[in-house]
Structure formats: C-alpha cells, structure tokens
Image 1 (tube, rainbow, N blue to C red):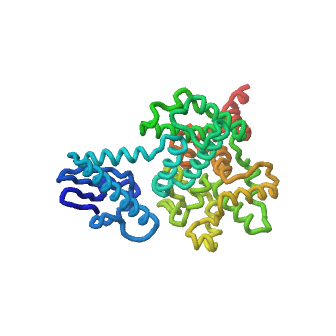
Image 2 (image 1 turned 90 degrees about the vertical axis):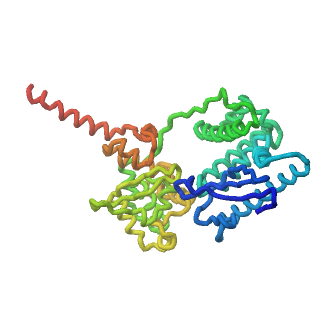
Image 3 (image 1 turned 45 degrees about the vertical axis):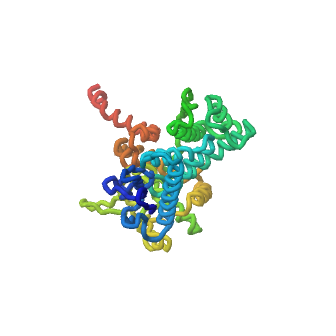
Amino acid sequence: MRNSSSFSVLFWTNKSKADAKGLIPLYARVTVEGRRAEISLKKKLNAKKWDAKSGFMIGNGEEVRRINKYINDVNNELFDIYQHFKSLAKVFSAEDIKDKYNRKEVLELTHTLLGVFDQHNSEVESLIGKDYVKGTLTKYKTIRGKVSDFIYTKYSKKDIALDELDYSFIAGFEKFLKVKEGIDHNTAMSYIKRLKRIATIAVNHRLINHSPFAGFKCTTKKVIRTHLTENELKALALKDFKFKRLEEVRDCFLFSCYTGYAFIDAQKLSLENVVIRADGEAWIETRRTKTSIIANVPLLPQAIAIINKYKGHELCLINNRILPIKSNQKMNAYLKEIADLCGIDKNLTTHIARHTFATTVTLGNDIPIETVSKMLGHTKITTTQIYARVQEKKIGRDMLKLRDKFDWQEASA
C-alpha cells in the first residue's frame, strides 16, 4: 500500500461486524501526518480469504481477483487525491481526503436516469451470491430496457436527465407498458416499483431534490392463481409417458406439488436437505432463495418416492441434487406438452405446482392456513390468503359437518 513519512493507506476488515453468511466489511484507513480517517468501502468479503498482513485477499477465483483489483484501484485513487491536495500547497487532513473520495463515489452516479440504473445494476451484479440472486439482476436489466425504449419512443433521446423526471413521466411509462408493450396491470406495477427504487437511490444521493413518485400510487389487482384440481393431479401422477424426459419433468413438477417449493428452491435441494427427525418422519429443511426465510416441510409419501426414484440418476449424482431438474425454460416447455397428453386444459408452468400445493394439497384438505404459511416460507399470513380460495368440494364437506350437528332436530321431530 501507499506509504510515506506523512501519508499511508491501510486496508482492513472488521470481523466483529460479520453477517450471517460470514462476510466481513472492508475499510480503508487513510493517515496524514499521524492523523487517521476511516473509509467504509461498502464491500463485503470472505473472512477466510482475507490476509491482514498484505491487505489483499488470498487464493484463486473470480471473487478474489475482483476484490483485489478493487483494493488496488482504491489505493491508487486515494494516492491521486493526496497528490492533488499536496500540489495545492495548502494544509489538508486525512478527513479532507476521505471527503473528496466519498464525493467522487457519489458523482459516479451520473445525473441521468439510465446512468443511475447502470450504476445500480453494476452494484447488484457484484453482490450476486451474497445479497442478491441472479434473477434480481435479470429483472432490473429488463426494466432498464423498458425504460430505455420508453425514453426513445416518447422523447427521441437515448437518456433523460434526472431533473426532468416528474409525475407525467411515470404516468406515461405506465401507459407505454400497458398499451405499447401489452403488459398486464400487475406486471406493469412491478416494473414501476423497481423504477421507484432507482428514483429513491437518486434522492438518497442528492442527485434530485424529490422523488417523481410523490403523487403516484402503485396498485395491484386481485388475480385468480391457476392450480391443478385433485382429479388433474391424479391424472398427471398416473400417466405413463413414452419419453423419459417427460416423465422426469412430470416427477419434478409433482415434487413441488407435494412440497410447495418454488422452482429455484427445488432445483437446489440435495440429500443434505433431507432430514429424518426424532419421530422418524422425513423432512426437507432449507431456506427460500428469494427471502432466506426458513421453509421446512414434512415429506408426503409421494414426495419421498420421487426422491428415492432418482437417487441413482446420473445428473443427481454429478450435481449432488435430489431431482434431475432442467432449466426453468425447458421445464415450462415440456409441461405444455405434458398438459396436452394428460388432457389438462391449463397453461402449466413450474409455479403452478406451488399454487397446487397451497390450494389443492393443503388448504383443500383442511390444513390450517397458519401451517401452510409456515411451510411456504411466507412472512405474512396475508400472502398465504391469496391461495385460500374456497372450493366447492370443501364447501360441500363443511356443510355436511354442519348438517350432522343439526341431526338432533330431526331425531326430536
């Protein structure tokens, strides 16, 4: 690191602030004439790979190379700032260097909407596997593309200044999504919520004085979530397929119907997630990828049979997984073919399996909504209530119970 009789930079980590994943924050300590200033570099790294003596990470891999390059770049930037102050022939301190460096970090966020988008997406990409999943980056890249198309269509420009953003921009973007892009209301609102996040970043960095969303409300409409009925679930489970690929996709889909796991969570499950508890019952113990919330589920016999069926499957052995799950795109393509072969007149997707677990397998069989919510990994019971549609079969069953309670009236007549 840069050192002289009057100036030095030391990179260090604070192990006492390690997060749940064991990642520790990185800092730079600038010293000028014996006085220090600490700079939070807003990066977290693997504590086991940090070498305090050298001030760099050790080992191989993309993360090590990326962090070490970042440290080297910051070191050079701080030295350049020191040289700048020195050339002015004025008295300056470590705090002055810190302040100038931090202002530079803010100025890296350009004063245009797509500039802030790009900075945000770059930050998300650097934290994939730590604070974000790859799907989050994909979503923000998609919305960035939609915003870019809208700006070009509406204003004939490649970008727009932040201070030009106002309510009419947001309202115009909503109309563009619905009319030009043919996007439904709820999906359009999810795009606009992410755009609002970008605007909030601009406000927080004082690039604009107020958010253009001040008078805009993001609303959602209630939708009927598609699920398989009990008869459709049986037809799917009992169907014999000529092609192995269809049988495997069907089994993976059924596993999610019996457990409620979303595609991304089911895809990651390994035998280490299968736990036999003290009472002899088999459970899946894991956390949801989307929220990191615990989503432990006791296994139905049908789910156990599917796990056992694929214990020796080549892909499962190679990838240490319990299921030979293909990509989400391939799964959905094959599910459409499977639906046709089973006579199911529904657009089957991997997420319908989760809806089926919630609606048909559990709530439809009188499992309390609080229990279902816990298994689904929901943080709010209101989220689970989306699935709690009352089915005619359950209405009939409940009314039979009620009729039995009033049998005494017939007996006394």
